[in-house]
Every structure is written in structure tokens, then in C-alpha cells.
Image 1 (cartoon, rainbow, N blue to C red):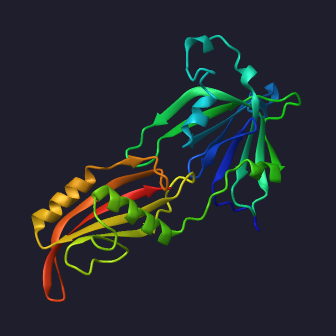
Image 2 (tube, one colour):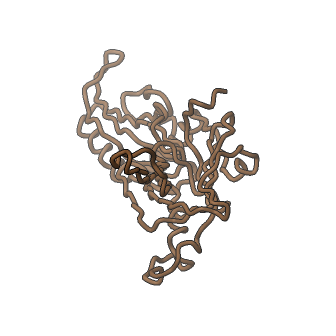
Length: 285
């Protein structure tokens, strides 16, 4: 594998603890300062430059809120004024940036990372919350700030395995759960992956998977379609269903929320006319 071109997220491991995966937003920044070396014979024209400082910082959005805030809050899960006046060097710990791609064997070790108490907590409306945490870098005893490392098995062992999601099983499970939520029977009033044979009822269909999600979860797009000869019946069913969402902490999903609603439109099949309305869902696993 050509490791000069890198595509893919990396895991953030601080003091031997997996904080999360940063797929698109980790900022590894180096600020350097120098001063010119001049001579009278050159009429103070710079003849060279002396590197006088190197400042390295790392910032990354993390979806694992407890782990992210845990490095900033005290043992009582609080941030208080007692932190003022303390030397941050006491919090100096190793930070490892490990690529998730198993074929990418080059990572980075920062031996002296110190949490920066400037952080941002993003309350996203349609995505999981994320905390952007930052680290300032102090040199170790040898003056090292950062180094390339070979990724070892112990690094990858700290990264939780991601299970493959069976979309068919998800569709069936979702249909069963929503049938109970709506108080109707599977395969008589609610159907998984197909339009009802009758001209009424509803269908649950998993349409696709998001590729733009944060790498901490799987996100699927599903629709619940309502069918009935009466338009007002379809609209009331959609409104009743949408009012039950969002839902969190289910056995098969972390959350289910409404993304959009398409109000009933006329449809026709087998010379029968009816109305069809659609509620689009985001399902986070």
C-alpha cells in the first residue's frame, strides 16, 4: 500500500484510553517562529534564520461525550475554579493517533499532550452531539514533540470493533418495533420492505446508509409509507406517528428521528386509487 496518500479516519488514544474516532475534522497544527540572523556587512539583510520555537496543537471533534469531557472534568464530573493556578504539565500524557485502515501501519505518537481547557460542545440538531477537544504539546525529557510510529496490535486492540449491520434484519426489526408502537399487526397492517397488498396500511423500507456519518456509528435512512383511500386518514396517521419520535436508547438502535415528511399524494395501482404519505427516518445504530 502506498502510504504517501492517506484516506480514512484515525482513532484518538490518550493515556492508553480510546477517546473516539475522528473521521473528518482532526486538526494537527504546527506553529513555528524564527528570527533573522543579520550582519553589518549585509546591511542588516537576513543571511539566515534561527528557529526559535515550535508549538504543536491537536484538536478533534469526538462523539463519545463522556470520554471527551472526562479528560477536562474532575473526578466529580465537574469543571470548577479549582483548576485555576495549576500547572498543566501535571496532566501531560501520551497521545497516539492511529489510522483505522488496517493496511496503514504508520501512526503518530505525541509523548507530552496536555488537554487544552478551551473546548466546544456542539449540540447538533440532526446528528449526535460532539465535543471538540484540543491538546497542547509539551516536549518530553529528550525534547521530542511528535514522532512517526509503527502501529502495533496493542494500539488496534484499544479500538472497539465495528460490527457489520444486516440491512434485512434491521428492516424486519424496525417493522416489528414500529408495529408495536403504532398498535398494528405485522403483515396485516404493516409490511416490511413492500407496499401493502391492500390499498391501506403502511410499509417500512430501509432505503440506504449514510457515507457522511461520523465514524462512531452507522446511520441508515428508512421510510415509513402510509396508504389509505382517505387523504385525511393518511395525514392523521403520519402526524400520530411523527409525534412519537425521536426515540433513544433502543435495543437495536441508538436513536430514531424524523428527517422529513411528504404529505399524501394520489397514487394508483390495479385501477384502484388511494393516497400515499411518507415519513423519512434517520436510524443510528
